[in-house]
Image (cartoon, rainbow, N blue to C red; front, side, top):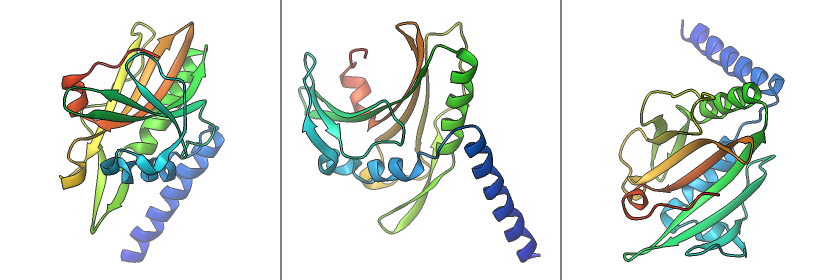
Length: 190
């Protein structure tokens, strides 16, 4: 019986991987795991070349980027308490809503329920709320993930999959940041 379950698990994993390949979607997991592991260190080992700063920010290119991402950077937002660092990747942009909606769901599925080894334990990325599907009526949407169980160095970690309509195109961003930032700072739009 165990062998049957194992076979079905392998078959379903292979099937999911094949469907992602057919849909033109590649997995973002391995790069996301590298980013998440550097969260407690404010992404310091991922900071590449300095970028031109927007008002009230500090920006660096990221040395870890999602495959086929349009732009990946690390942005610092100074506050009274500390500098809050956000790893941000502009994953996808299109004028076609249906294509955008399909890609957003593929990224969501790729993140949801994935496990990651943190120090000596394994934990899953789980959605903070039920999945919200993009709609042409809404210009901004976010689905957030956190670890399934508390991990001391990662208790404030947020993985944020953002859908946004800006400059006549639908854009998908992936952000990793400290949830305390939300209560202290509101980042400017991109």
